[in-house]
Length: 91
Image (tube, rainbow, N blue to C red; front, side):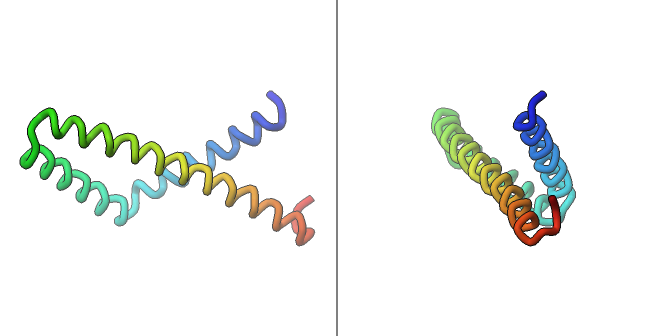
């Protein structure tokens, strides 16, 4: 495994740990309840075809948001390391 692969694995582990910790938070529980409520609204107010269409759109939007969050998280870690190096706190 080369340095870039090791770095990517390290960042993936940090991200996975952060997400796992977030999923234990009250905020996450609230969001999960809200999503369940939204799903109930879709089921109640839309036909099966309309619900499938809306769910497909929401899924795609969710993937985009997830990717943007991952990119921002990775950049934040890189920026933090860069800052620490420039302050002489890490080699």
